[in-house]
Image (tube, rainbow, N blue to C red; front, side, top):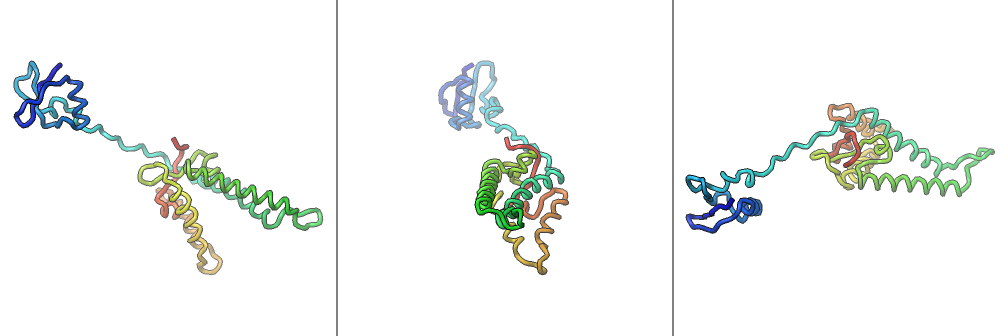
Amino acid sequence: MTYHLARNNQATGACSEHEIRRRLASGVLAPGDLCWTEGMSEWRPLGEVFQEAVEPPEISAPVSSPLATLSQRLSAALLDGVPMAAIYHLTLTGLPDENGAGGSPQLLYLCGLLLLLLAACNLYLLATRGQTIGKKLLHIRIVALENEGHPGLMRVFWLRSFLNALIASIPLFGLIPVYSIVDVLFIFGEDRRCLHDRLAATRVVQGDPP
């Protein structure tokens, strides 16, 4: 079907229905421009005749992923922390030999290399997926609080991990790790966001990244 077009009471030509929709979408035609075709009693604005072409599509609200459970968070922390702590301990002491003395230097080098590989693997997963090894195994991930997208390395590592560790290292009340204890206790809140989640504006949800 062909429509005759007009703007400011001046005829501007004729276009097919398909072409009008294309020009409306690109902004060449305005919703206030007039059109007429056979069967119409009067000229009408394009915005009325082709309403669906000028109205922006509705953007549905993002579906909120379920929060990771307390057991998932704890299990992921253990999967990440226990192996690294054990390897770190071996790099300092080495495995004792039959006489109780420290192990060989080669063992220390091997443990140090393994520790670096684990740290590098976790850093890569955080940067690309918002996961650590433990979180990946349990199918949970760190997401941005505002849109559940990937929060980026600045937030998942530098704010959520590095800055949080610096704050936790500040001595308070002697040797009592006050900040670390409070940080963990925040997980019992309704939104299950620890202090490090609040520092980085993140949360931990179930599911692997898309």
